[in-house]
Image 1 (spheres, rainbow, N blue to C red):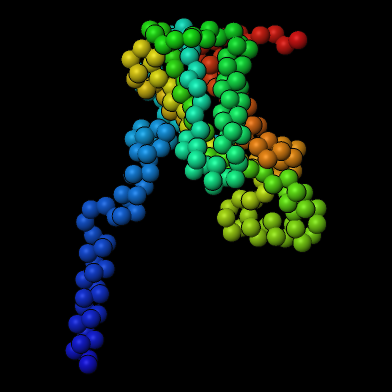
Image 2 (image 1 turned 45 degrees about the vertical axis):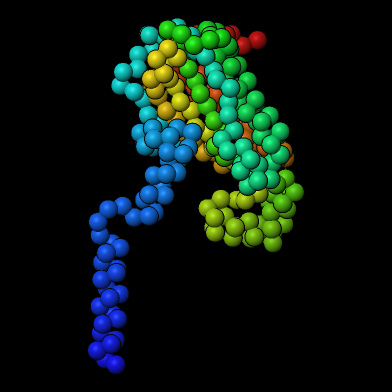
Length: 238
């Protein structure tokens, strides 16, 4: 019996050794496949954290020169994996599509407000913005109100936040954006971010309020970067 036990232990040790050595693990393979199947594809690996703004990530092509671009074209914003997102979030597909339209309009307004030329077709001297909404987490107005006021609700909310790292009653959103040369298709920059709303924000009164707020912020961020890179002048506020 002792010899048999030793043999079994030796086999187990050998299995553990083989699993821990040589090549990628199945988990690594799963992560690689996930990255390749996302909106940014293999290029997602180029992204690096933006210090002080995590989980924001970005990458800029060293060849990018803003002086080469005189106009911007904004592709139709996508909802990445629409059916799956609708199932996971509980938000109707039409409402998710409306969110994509909201982001599209926010991007266009951010550009028009600083009088940056918008192109209606790709071509030389045109920078293309391609964006996708990759995750939407709806707010739960009723539960959020209860967990903000009642002592029991506050304790439950704190417990849920500790378990999953965020308040499940507060909405959020994720996006991925590619900036490319509209003539050659060469990628000039990449961006991704995830925003979790503030528990005591009035945007929680709407199921998709936090997503819309995040999209407005991202459009404003792109506007500010354009002002820095191109030196465009914003339209005087009325």
